[in-house]
Image (cartoon, rainbow, N blue to C red; front, side):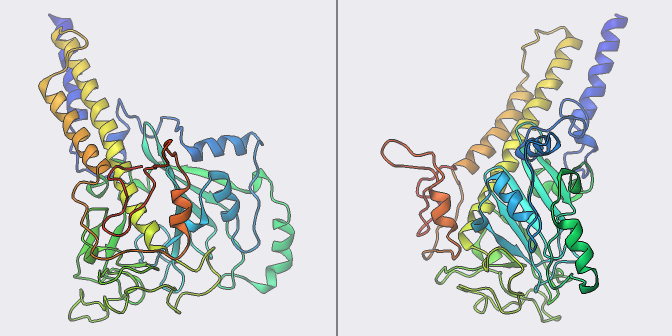
Length: 395
């Protein structure tokens, strides 16, 4: 009787931890079993690169202008054509980001890299099969741009940067700071990614009193890309990109026509600060779809593991068969699985009113990445006339 009471008590403790407020922020609830986010060793592409760097199997080369960015993208197999630019002050390095000096994002199927000209760090996020989004910084990675260059120290910097070795850089996993924004209801309450759209003032700050949106493939075009640069054509459709909310009496008033169908970056963006002079519209569309799918994969993973762990504890306490699954567990898993299935099938994607095109060549590169069936079909083939993908199933 005592043993059964103790087992029931243990199950109750686990029960309370597993049904903790799903809308709470921070990492603490992910550090409980069965997830153990912080103490688990990640197995994502950045973690793999970190191990290869430590073993001396690979070496990042420093570009005099862009630091370690080009070499890092090459090692992670990320195309520079995936570049998109965000000028809103809504991320880690807000004091360095501005409409003249936007933050660049580069991505592939599993990794996202953030680069701010003039900064000494690169921000990375990688999708781990068990943990979801794992965040890193690469320190000492800055290049020599005119905005941060000190002529008096040019000789000394040249000496220290001539032949950097593994010890000259530091790839560090973040275990706390990033989750304050990247583990909330905006990311399906799991460590994940988000694309925000705001009404920015001329400095890139969110306009006080204005709305903001978390955008994905389901979002109306009129709510997308506030605080982002967008290069590409989209006909009569309108978005919030390339614009500012400058009327203090009406903080949500923007010139959507003035920001539409731009094929070049506005002249306010300082030239030569980024790998490409573009913020590709098609890359933005793929990014929004991919971030939601990544978050829902992680949510399905977490929900299933937590529900099964709870059942296993209760089965032991109540002396039920170990494989027993309660109706509540089945409903919990089905709910997360159904949400993921809907995202994979692009349910609720609004129909395009006009054809869409980008400017960086991202479309062509993305479509060649495969895999391709024997009859030449691929889930990476894009439509861009009525919807994003030719076949309504996520790659």
